[in-house]
Image (tube, rainbow, N blue to C red; front, top):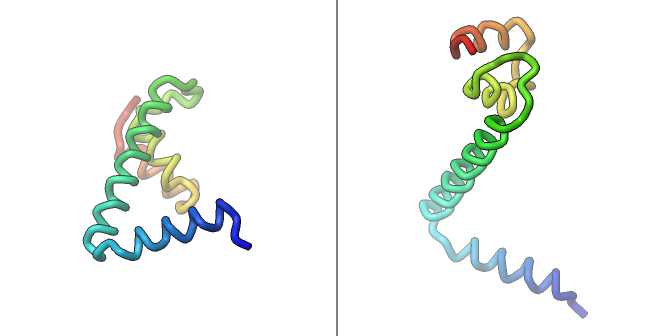
Amino acid sequence: MSTAKEDLEARYRRMLLSLSPGERVAMACRMFSTAVTLVEAGLRVSANPQNLNVRQRKFLRFYGRDFSEADQAKILKALGDP
């Protein structure tokens, strides 16, 4: 017997699969844009002990773990002074 959660997941999967590839990409882009907006809003109101600007903090939040400390320093410098 399926649960309500399983039924909902199956319905959601069918809905996603009914979309064209372009519609799925557009949905993903909208979701990423919303995530960026939420992160920026959070960064504007949160403490900033490193005295970095929002662009620098956003870079660290989204991509910081992908770069070495040396590369991070170069990128942060390129993103501007606080």
